Image (cartoon, rainbow, N blue to C red; front, top):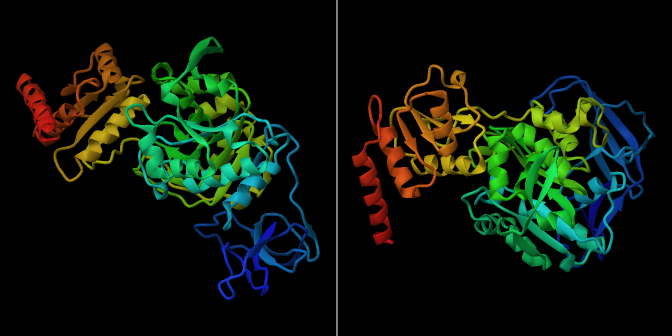
Length: 483
C-alpha cells in the first residue's frame, strides 16, 4: 500500500501526514493505493551496516493513482509485474508491517494480514502494554505512547466501544505503574480516547493451573480478549523482552517471584498455556538494543510492527529480524519448528539488521558489575535503582550478586562479592560461598544506598559492620527529618 496526503482544494500532495495544506490551509485527505505494479528495479550486491545480506533488489512500485515508492525485496521481479502481499494461511503466522510515517496504518495492515484475528463490536478487550518503570518515550523502555494511541484508534474504528476497553499493566515490583504510565505518555493516550487505565497489581487475581504449576493471574485477563502490546527489546537476563515476557506481569507478586525462583525459562512456557485468547501487536517502532530491558539499553529505531496469535512465534521472528539468538524459553514455548513459521507482510530476509546484543555483567555504574542468577523483577529493579543513584561516585570494583539460579562456577575468579536481596543471600549460604557483605531486600532504600556506597568506596576487602548499620539507620532518620 502507498499512502499520500492530498489537499482537497489545490490537490498538492505530501508523502508524510499533515493536518492542513501549508499553502491554502484547506483540509487534507489520505489517499491509499493498493493496486501496485513494478515499474523499475536495480540489484544491490555490496553489503552495508543497515543491509548486511546481499544480493537484494530495490524495486520501484507505482499505484493506481500514479504514486510511487521504492521497496527492498529478496525476490526477483520483472517490469510490469503486479506486487501483491499474501495474507496468512496458518494460525501461528507472524505479520510484519514497516512504519513509514503512519503507525495507525501499519497496525491495521499487520492485523489484517493475519488469519482469523479480526476484532468485532461487542468484544471486551484488555490492552496489555509494557510499562515497567518511569522513563520517557524516546528511551524505548516502555511501549511507545504514539503506538498505543494508534492502537486504541484502530480498536475504536473496529466498532469496539471505549467502555469495553481497558489498558492494564503493572510495573516492576518496587515501582509505581501510574508514575511510569504518566511519564511515558500512556495515561495521556488513554485519556484522549476515554479508555480506563488499570493497575494490575491492585488485583483481583485468580489461581489457575498449567502443566502442574499454579499461577495467580489477573482475573480480568481471563474474561477478555487480550491485546498483548509489548515493546520489543533486548534483555540481559532473558535475551529479549517481548510478547512472551510481557505476559508475566499478569501474575501477582507471589507468582512473579516464584517464576524466577523456580526457573523463569521453564515457567514462561507454562504461563503462555495458561492465558488464552491472546493477540499480540508488538511495538518495534523504536525497539531497544544493547543492555535492556531498562534505561541502560538504547533505542534501535527499527520502525516495525509485529503481529501474531502465537507470542512465542512472534518473539522468534523478531529475533531473526534483529539477528539475535532465540532464547530457550521461546523455543520451549513454540517447539522445534521455528524455521517453519509463516511470515507475511514484509520479507524477513529483507528486514534483517543486526542490533546490539546485551552484555551479562553491566550495570548503570561503571565500577559495579552484576552476577545475575535470574533475579526476580523486585531485585532487578532494586539493583538498577541503587546503582543509578551512585553514578559519579567512583570506587574499587565490586560484584553484586542477585537471584537464586546461582552456581559456584558463575563466581569463580570474582572478588569483592556483595549479595543483594534475600534470594541471593539464601542461595550463597546454601552453596557455602562467603561474601564481603549482604544487603537485605526488606531494609529501607536509604540504608541500602548508604551500605552499597560504603562497600564501593572501601579499599581491599569491604565489610559491613554493626557500626555501619547504625550509621545507615541514622542517615535514614535524618533524610526523613530533612523532608
